[in-house]
Image 1 (cartoon, rainbow, N blue to C red):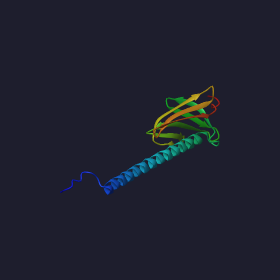
Image 2 (tube, rainbow, N blue to C red):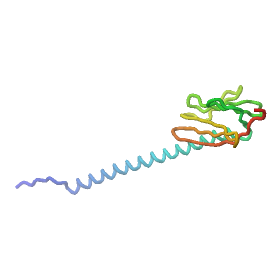
Image 3 (cartoon, rainbow, N blue to C red):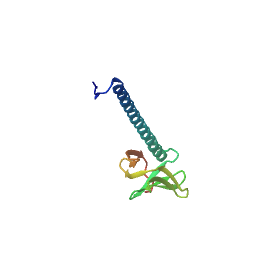
Image 4 (spheres, one colour):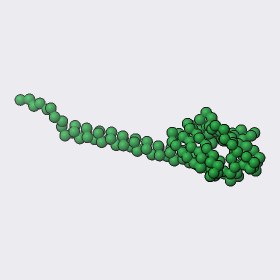
Length: 146
C-alpha cells in the first residue's frame, strides 16, 4: 500500500517560516535605514538653510535694504560701501557683490521669494530647497537716503 504525502513535513514548514522571517527582517532593516537617511538629509538641509540666513544677517555684513525689483533684492553694506543683489538663478540662490563675483547661498532651490516689509523692517524670505519649504524673517534697516 502506497502513502500519498500531500502535506508539508515539519522540516519544510520550519524552513519556510525561517525564510519568511529573514525576508521580513531584511525589509524592516531597509525601511529603517531609509528613514534614518531621510531624517539626516532633512537635518542637513535645515542646517544649510540656517547657514544661508546667517550669512545674510552676519554682523560684519551689516546689510541694509535698498530696493526690490521683481525677485531681485538690492542690499547695501555701509562699512564696505558695496551693493549686493540677492536672487535665484539656475536653481542657485546667489548673493552677488559689485566686483566680488557671487556667493552661492543654496543650491537646488526650486522657489525663492523675498519681500521687504517697510513697517517691520524685515526681509521675509520663502524658499523651496531640496523639495522642502523654508521661511525666515531677517531684520534689515532701510539704507539712509532711500
